[in-house]
Image (tube, rainbow, N blue to C red):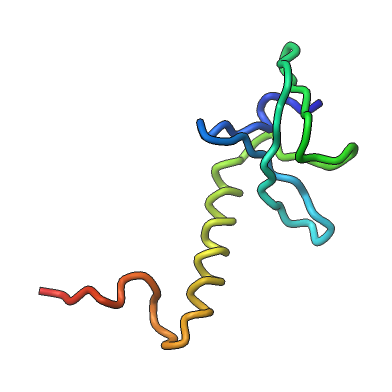
Length: 90
């Protein structure tokens, strides 16, 4: 079971952030069951004893998106920004 504040419902899937062994946070898709008071039963996606984030989701989500964008940009062989190379300024 996890606190209801740990679950981020996107409308398509439910996620939470878990602390990993390097003390950073990974998004994890979870399947939840019944809500009991202020907690959800987690049916899959988490292991017993894993630490989950219950506040500051926005900051962690923004940081994970930033890190993904940096990794994607670093794989661009031209070394330039990715995604908008075909656009010309007017």
